[in-house]
Structures are given as C-alpha cells and as structure tokens.
Image (tube, rainbow, N blue to C red; front, top):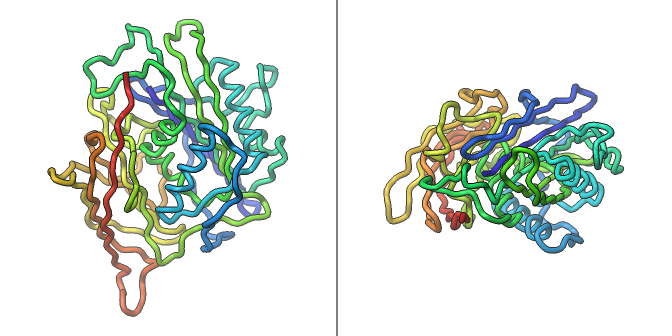
Length: 363
C-alpha cells in the first residue's frame, strides 16, 4: 500500500497563511486529520527565469537518486530545477525520524514531548532549522510492505511488496496523485529530503513501512520560478519514462466513489499554465501505441470536489490502470489566456507527446 500526504504553507506579502493537506492509499487508504483548504498560488513575487542548473548536492545513495530524478523530470517538462538546502534536509530528516520513532504513517504535525520532536508544524520545523520562507510544502510518501497474510491483495492487479521499495518508487507514486503531482511541479526553488524505515510491527498493525519526506521551499529572500505566461507545460511530457502505471487514491480524494482496490486509475497527465492565466481544455486523449485509446476523465477547478485546483490547472486522468513498460501518446487541445495575441486571439494551442510507463514492482 502507498499513502501520500502533503501539507503546504504560503505566506505572501503579509497575507493570511493558506494550508492544504491530505493522504491516500491503496486498498484501504489511510487518512490524515487535517482538512483541505483552497490554495491560490500567488501572481506576485514570481520569476519566469527557470532554474536550469543547481549546485552539486551532497546526497548519496537513494536520496541522491530521488533528487536527480525529480530535477530531471522538472527540467525536461519545463518546471525548472530545485536546489538542495541543508536546512530543509534537517527539517525533512527530523520529521522522517519522528514518524518512525512514534510508529506513524504520514502525520504532518508533531506533538511536543514525543520522541524526536523538532517542531509542531512544517513551518515550525523549517524555521527551527534556520530556513526563513515565503512558501513551504511537505510531501510524504509511505510504503507499507511485509503485509501479513490476512491483508493480502492476491487476485488484484497489484500486490503489497514483501520488502521495502526504492525511494524512486515512492517519488513516482507521488507523481500519480494529482494534488501531489501539482505540488512536486510547483515553483519552489529548494528541497530537503528525508527518509525513515520502520521494520517492527506495532500493536495491531501487520505491516512495516518506509517513509519519504520531501520539504520544498522558496526562501523569504527569493521569488517563485515559473514558466512564462505564453507557455503550457505538462507532466508527463515528451521523453518521460518509467512512470507508475497505477494511481491508487489520494486524500483529499480528487475522484469520489472510485474503488481503487479493484479498479485503479492510471498515471494522470497534468496540464499547467502560470498562475493568473485561465486554461481551458477542449479535447484530450491518451492512446496506447500500437493499441487502443484509454478511457479518461478531466479534473479541473470547475469539478474539483476539494476546491484545491486553480483556473490554470487541469488533469487528464486514465480511468483504468495503464500497462507495464508501454508507450502512450497524448494529444491535447485548448486555450490559454497567456497565449492571446493579435495572431492568436483565442489563445489556442495543441500539444502532442509520448511517455512510457515502467514495470510496477510487487511481490
């Protein structure tokens, strides 16, 4: 089972802090306590100069792999790279350690007096680590593994892994969840990576768990990095590969009433214009190369049940899981107010690209 959880803070020119959060899972999703609140990305304090080069990080092993993969994906698809910030590393690793030491799954808030306490909220933790921010976000991907036989998913299109998967798999699972994918491709400039592994059963829980914690930030002295207004960006994009064929749910739930345990969705396509622009999609399709078309549905601000998405964000979601190691062609048609000009009065655009799934890792 995968659980995904995100918590976002944005302090903009003295305005009120906005928060949003959630978790999600597979056959039996684990939820978090915090309710979602609308996120309105700022139109001010932004730069259209995307970051194309960052200092060499000090990460090693799987943390380095996650850092490199995220930056490769962001750079390829036109969202700009993020740099390592050791203060965010301290906050992220401290929270991963807190989760493990207190036998939690994906909690964002800490309780003073408990083992490994470093700060009640993500804002407290990054401040305590010396990071002053204009916006900050925390994403958690928790993988349950070693499930006891009475929780077996035998007969389903996926199974609980018998051992911990790589952190790259946790990152790719965040990509499958629309709200978390939007956060991973947002205009942050820095990142911290934390990792924790729990390998002892606790109480009635019949599973072990690993935990990837990503803390994204824009420092108080910086501005967001964003594509130009005359751009439509997507993830996946041309050349994206190795993506998870399954979307197994998210909380807050973007698609109400879906039985992911028996009929998972597939990797969604994120379509993005800069904040302040209005994006309208008039057509979209996902087609298996050498095969047939994939059934899809749209998710956008007008039908988002949690009112999290802005007018510049759309998702084209497969309503069935995709095949392993398979190419898919995406065709998109729409309008973006940032593209309006004398020669393009409606701001129309079309995009066509191909991506490839990976092999879903299971037992």
